[in-house]
Figure (tube, rainbow, N blue to C red):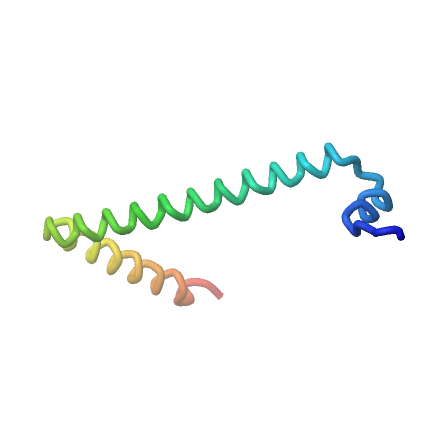
Amino acid sequence: MLSWDMTAVYRWLSGVTYKEVSMKQLLRIFVAVFIFASILVGCMIALLLLILMVRFSPLLIAVVLACWIYRWLQSRIDQPSQWTT
C-alpha cells in the first residue's frame, strides 16, 4: 500500500529541492531566534532602566520631564497653525 507524504508532494509540485527547503527552514529558525533574543534584550534594558530610575531619583525626574516635553511637543505639532491658510 502506498503512503503519501504531503511535504514530499508539495516539494515535488513546487519544484523545490530538499536542500532548499532545509535551508529555508534553517533561515526561518535563525530569524525566529534573532527576534526572540531582540525582544529579550529589550525587556532586560527596560527592566534595568526601571531599576535605575527607582534607585536614582534624578534619573526618574529626567525621564518624567522628557516624557512631558515630548507630549507637549506632540500636542503642539497636532494643532493646526494659525498662520497657515
